[in-house]
Image 1 (cartoon, rainbow, N blue to C red):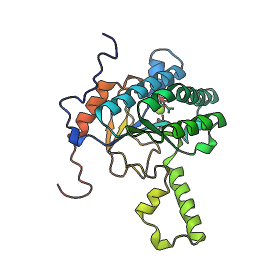
Image 2: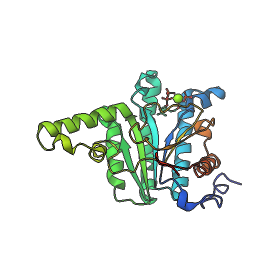
Image 3: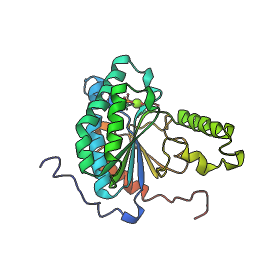
Length: 250
Ligand code: IPE
Ligand code: IPE
Ligand code: MG
């Protein structure tokens, strides 16, 4: 049996389509450990991680999840060895170039969130090309957080809003949660319902700090390159056992 024929395009029957998360976010962690366990260089873990992400995106699309956000590179990840950072930037660019046609054909609308201006220019070009080519697509939103930091995002929103006040475009009374959200990188995108982190770390590592206010958290020991459709199914089953109270009583 090939890998593909063993994957299900149908939502598993034990999942309730009415109670699927609309938006799933993933902290794709553990690529380095996956490689190390096999005596391989860390970069091979990143390369394998791309395949995992591609499969997850397809699965989300097939099962009816409306948006997937993936944490690809944090504002703190620049502190890694130069060779690893350079490999990742080149990998993002190569993957974008390679996968764009398929994303266009499959109805994926791709967004990038983060401080994109600090990325290599050639990568910025691919990012702009991919966003422009897929902006009319409707099947699924795929949001890639690249050079993303939740704190940086919030500071940037504060600066934007302060500038608006200074220019007297808005008054202090206009500042509320809905206005603030419109100044985040994620403006117009629903908050995630489910955050999955692989490789066992129980932290958010500066990811979507504002947007995560009421996300359900799911942490698995599985390393990102091993996070397959079966693992995602488990995460969704677990999500469907949760009672989301949003501060009220159920
Ligand atoms: C996540 O895997 C990928 C990125 C942060 C780019 P890691 O590279 O953090 O893998 P570990 O945590 O070292 O195993
Ligand atoms: C979070 O993973 C960032 C990404 C997955 C891109 P890290 O491996 O950078 O997080 P820490 O250092 O364990 O908190
Ligand atoms: Mg890590």
